[in-house]
Image (cartoon, rainbow, N blue to C red):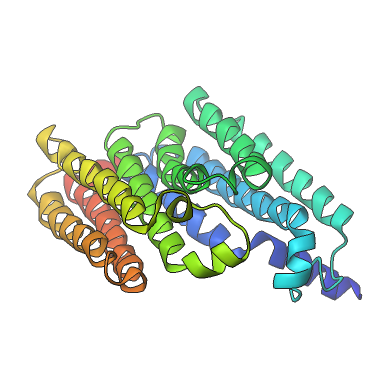
Length: 283
């Protein structure tokens, strides 16, 4: 392999699209907390730390999954020989170190979230990935915590805590629905996902119940006077879309999990609009 192919392989290990998406979610968390312009260095450090941590987590995941990937994903960087297993491990350590260094300049709550997330990223593949429900819950927490991390970086969690709950539970619901969608393939591979462990409909019922609880919490920023009616006007339709998606998944998991993404996106927009109209983004 040439140096260029190795560099390309290292970049692939990070999953650039995932890195960018997670970094954007951290920025949104800081924006919703109202600290983008008043704490620009902290926001930049949090966004960069998120990107490095996600890249490191993806790289170490490929390191642990290298034998499975030789069969299921032979085109990935390690199986095709672009990056050696030891090189992938060293690369992930460098990225993790960079994320930790950036996180250390942030407030203590952000540091605590960063430490927990880094440990979770390392432990996911080896400890949680094969456990019914727990692997889904960890993924959901990591997605939701990007908002919380961004808010904690500017020292004002506020309504971002509700966004963390809503995004995390919606992600958990979607992960469970995806497991129902992939039931046959997962069973053939010997995986023990939640739908396999307790059945399809009970798993969907659990996912729906959790989503209902999160939806009930979504008006809290409006009730506390943190956001105005514009937020409510957007978050309520988002809630309706997500609830319908959960209902739809009982008959069509593919359509349900796809529709749930749109509801999650609209919910995030509701928080952005709520903060922007309240003028807190420039506080």
